[in-house]
Length: 480
Image (cartoon, rainbow, N blue to C red; front, side, top):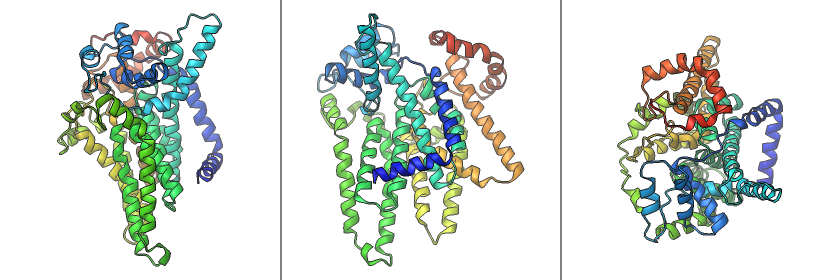
């Protein structure tokens, strides 16, 4: 199953090799744009897992937190109180992150460790301590690589469902916060999340053809990885679950006598769950060691209201509303809805492919639901509605569908202009956010529009020079 899937993927990549080579070239040339530093408390928490397990073989993060705090890296208000004074029920320091990003970063961190040791042996004064430049650079470049792999897998998924994907993939790359969390804040978990979810979705699209034991076991592996990267990503499971139940019900009621028993499907489902639970064990162990129970710290529960009172704000608020910050999302959602309607019209009732589009829509809705259940839904101080970066694969598929439905000349040109504006809006906001031209807590439409279309173009040459040759100048406190 796995070798066949890889062969299919390679065959697909060869079909449009010039475009793929161009895409890879763009990514490679963009690597100098990756910001090789950690600064936010979330980044430090994710990194602390990796550094502590690699060098100390434990989950006591006191020395990692102290390192970043003493050097002025961890400047977040309340960092000392939360991470250097408070303790969990097991007597350890809090870590609100998960272990998945550390697992994905590990190969890159190993390379960074090797580089540091070679440099040290060659006479360099670089520290072999897990914090020095080779380690941080390796982790941040690793996030960029995973973000790019997320795009590749999203394109593969879109091509499988819609028939095209490279162009929509490029649009989503530059038109959503994925770019920001690949290049400007790569120490966050979001690029890794985009990769894990995309891998999960691509596996689902392949496995659903037969729902074999081997295929569902692989799906369980990616499900566990996905949830270990970000807990919120557990809600992406709803797509394959609904598809599996629906297809099983149709097969049982179908004309083929060999498929009329639920027992084989139940056995397949049990295998998938058991494999997922086994792969998820690193996170289970981490929870128990840190928190004394399986699950995040109890203080997280105080932030949750499962009636999702903030769902509307998540989409439309000027603070960090998804559509306000990233209007390209609206086109993607419209594309998914149009695709679901077309699939239903083409089939008798709900066709097999409509299960997929329904699952993708349910995935998107549940992300709005769970984010809307958080009192901290706005992710204050973060760029855009960052909790939706994991949904990159859904956005690429939806945008590919929307582009397919708009075929006539003038409509196509108008859509191209609209997408161009959405992309520039995202790029403009990233520049404003990084350079201090905007209030990072909210969108001020008139001010941000003026900056994006007047001030940013005027200052772009100097800002680009600073970014590549004096990036440290962006790290100073801004007065605006």
